[in-house]
Length: 124
Image (cartoon, rainbow, N blue to C red):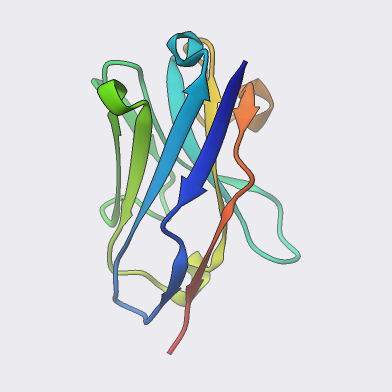
């Protein structure tokens, strides 16, 4: 079993930056793909970014490409999302997720483990 815990959310002004962390515990060796999804009020949950076990493969939603960077530190069982040049439309609850195998990154039904989410609010 795997448990995921997000941290690092908060309030930031447009153009600012935040760094989210997701700490995994339990049987972390079962994790292959780590990723982030987000969900704004009244909207469907959407894919943000994903990274493979080795970190050699990353994938980003078009809306965040060039602004967000996903990374992972397997020694710490943690993955990160550095968010730069934030926009009001980035406001959402951000969820860290993980899958036991290599999957299509943006297909949320394929992920096996979900954190409880951390709120990111981008506002003047």
